[in-house]
Length: 298
Image (cartoon, rainbow, N blue to C red; front, side, top):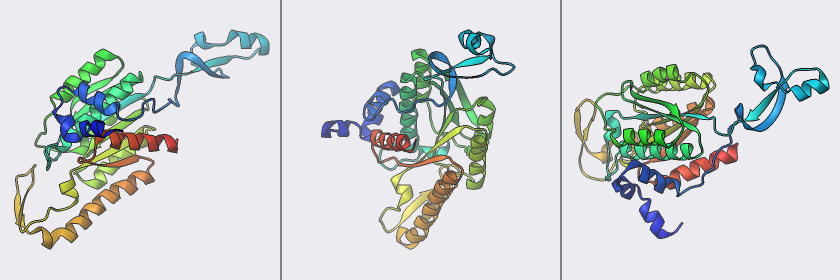
């Protein structure tokens, strides 16, 4: 990728582009497309295989030619290439509003959600969007088509950080919206009770959904900045603490690393895809590397 393209795809520059659709196009054009082939069976035009008839199957899908030859009832199955339902859960809690370099975690997460939506709809999959803080505050059911893309992009344009959080509650609520198995993508900083969040993620996975967690954090949350004294403020409670980074750096970074590793290992053990994201990284590169690795694993 040339230098000019890389410069354009800097997160700060992308954030300044007008319109979520434009941002999504810039990002998606930066990495490979056609990233999946649905493993689910449906009824489209491409024939896949036969299976024996079971009570309750629609008679219109019986293969009468096979019946004439074998005197047995078989159903035609088709490979449905566009039937994946993708549910994107976007965290807009107060902590997501934090930024150290001009792009907040919410800005970055919103651009990621827009890019994934654009890519999936371009592949003719169905995409839904659920925005949450202490619960789901906006739910757009999965649909296909250019008009639906406009609905999602318009909603993402107007997302702002709120003052509450409750990831676990939102995930539990999401379980009520996902009626059939699909792909659930969670984009969040995961700042909540880890045990409860993991429990809710595992419940969604138990229901046969495929889960991807994009764990979004700011570089200043990963490593404390140099300096004699720093004032820390809890965005959600307003509590403030003045301290010297050098005195707490080692313990702070240990806690953060444990926080990240706990999610990473717990998700891996539950067959949940976990991917850590730093908002300083170019989004096209982040998504491109992730999806390329995902294809290799398949």
